[in-house]
Image 1 (cartoon, rainbow, N blue to C red):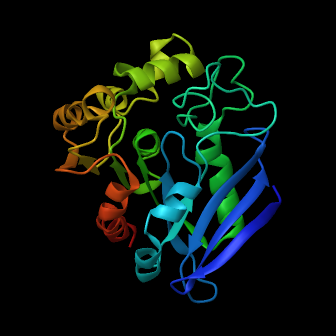
Image 2 (cartoon, rainbow, N blue to C red):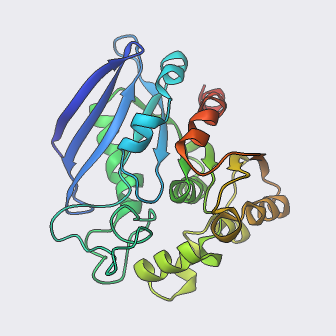
Length: 280
């Protein structure tokens, strides 16, 4: 699990790094970014995981997320994995579509061929990369939280609901809350997991809540001018599920904002402060 440093840059007194390693889960090299804020020698710091959306790599939030000043102020490590395996021999969507295959791993462990060998993003994000982070960085494994955008919001919600004891806070920007009910999810879950809808439910936030998964609270921001709002995102489904389950959901519809990093960066500070308060 040797770690290769691709680059490091000083920012806000901390270090923004990009790293590469050979993943046993995906069978490929994987690249991720980590911001480590200024800290005292020997200190172990709380960690915020950020999962990105369709077509993204680690670089999108690293370059556009505007999180470093706040993470330096709040003493948070910020980790951004890639969204899929990549490299020679990794299968892609046959038609080259953006919503399946490379850049669109949907944070599941695929069981369908030809994707099952490499598309193991669930195990990569929940097992392999956390172990590597704890071994190589001053991360406090007892203080972790998770957030994400769009497909990554789906990942943050499903992972947070599955491991409520691990993640002290869970939030999302414009998440796919019910992939089993929308076109993006039908394509991805069907392609990676096959037609067994029971397997889909384990990777669907609304279904997980319906089936008994619980968190004390969630924070979700959604742009009112998001072109994917009605067809793909449907946050009202999450609102209904949380109300029925007694989960305290703060769902904020931000008028005029779209699906882009202009939206994410605008509300990143709110989310990081919300996470920091729960990681103390």
